[in-house]
Length: 430
Image (cartoon, rainbow, N blue to C red):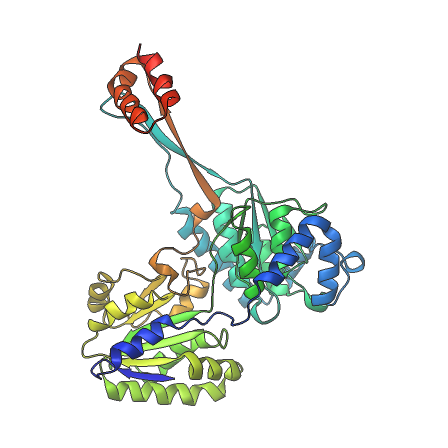
């Protein structure tokens, strides 16, 4: 991992390199994804059958295309009570947090007498991608489905690969809690293409959300415009700002909570104490061999981890803003955390105080854990209810309000060289 000190002469260049480091997959998958999308659009279910046999090693026609609601209910009932209660608690908190996000319609009259406003409505159908293999996370099922439910989406479709035909019972249980309408056993770029263009079996949707590998992310990018998407997400990342009053092994665990996602994940510590930085580095090295995800964490920490010593913790905030991290922990006393947070401009989600680990946010806190990565928090936000809704504005004029604002419209239309625009208004004025 990189060790940087803000007082070193070469710090600016070294930090620039850290900010500019692109951790996305080095392989260019765009051409392969374009070919998959084109084939699914042309061949529909036949293409899905072939890709599933090749990549997931089972036959859809003989094994079944769908996971049924009965299957999901049975998986939920079969869960150990502690796990079932944990999923229920997470769902309750996620649902409540997102219910508070529901936007209000507006309908009012302004000083000119014009009636103005906007009306919010849910999209008709949403597709949720749920990964299989390394990243089979029931928490992501809840984080994607429940905002759509709260928004009022009438048809929620889940697609998920089932390698070798095997399903993940906890994922199925989470789908039961969320109330998914359809679950299709297809994955990869081909599943995103099916959701966007539709096939004989799978009707198209309006919005696609959910994490996936490089092929899934690229398919979402290419199909944006055919459907709406949440974001093009990259590798996970966490930035922790911590003073020496924290236990080093606690901060080390926070850093590793993201390092264990993938070898391309990134974990960065800012601290104002060099000895504490050493202690955290030692704690990371001690913890890694004790956990089942050691190989992934070791690769992530070695290739993408960083510890940065700054003169004062306040100096870290401007540097954090340049990183615009997916997750930002401010592991300091509550008052100082609030003061630092007030200065934060760019972060996907911020965790305030010593007792607020990022991992809580992944599961049961309530705010969504689908967040912008790769510095995209500079211009985008985490998944919310409004990602499954659209706003329609409206306007109503009478003779008086048209007379008040219409002449200005005629003048502007003339300036733009659009006489029919001007005529449309002026005829009513006359």
